[in-house]
Structures are given as C-alpha cells and as structure tokens.
Amino acid sequence: MLRLDYISCFLTILSTLLIGRRKWQGWIVAGVNSIVITMIGIRTAQTGFIPANLFCIAIYAYNILHWRGGSTQGSPAAAMSDTLASQVAPAHIPRRWMRRRERVPAGDERVSRHSDRVRQRSLPHQR
Image 1: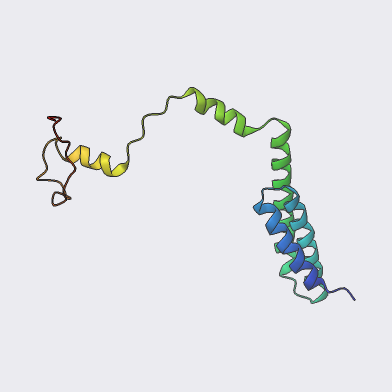
Image 2 (image 1 turned 180 degrees about the vertical axis):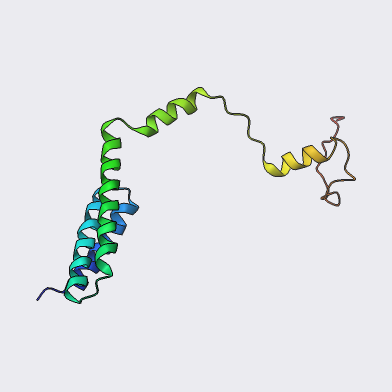
C-alpha cells in the first residue's frame, strides 16, 4: 500500500528546494504534491483539502506559464542592467557622515556628538 503522506512529505521538501533555487520545475513538483494531497483528502474524507489544493494547482500553473514565458523573450536582467549602466551613480557617502555634514559646520567641534574623542591631526612638516 502506498504511503501518500510520505510521498507528500518528500515532494514538499523537493519543491521547496527547487523553488528556493529559482527553478521552474519546482512548481511542477508542487503541483504533483497538491494532487497527492487532494488524493489524501478524498481517501480520508477531509473535503477541505480538495478546493484548497485545486486552487494551489491553478496558482502553480499560472507561475509556470509566467516563468517559462519570461525566459523565451530574453532575460529581463539584461534589460535592467542596460538601463542601470546608462545612469550615472552619485558618489557614495556613508549615512553617518551625511548626517554630520548636514547638522554641523565644517570646523565646529562643539556641536558634534563625538566631541570628547581625540581626533587625529596632521603635524606640520618642520623637520
């Protein structure tokens, strides 16, 4: 006798791993798992499983069509990287410096939160 609960457990783990790796085949495995769960619901007279898993199968079919359809038209990542390459990125300024620059004038050390710290000063080149 087939143990559908063990098969469903295995298919759940496999589909989760495949979808986590962004493989469209994971949606097919998840659809097969929903069919197995529907069979479990029919055998055990738990009819609540049936409409829920039929809905899941429809969602899986929709996802498969969109994932497979997107790969035949070209990579969307390539199109996005083209638009990013044409834009000029501003120079990166860390947030903590940005906040300090907005609030405190350049030579004023009294207002700074870290005014008690010893700051490194350059020595005059007299030697």
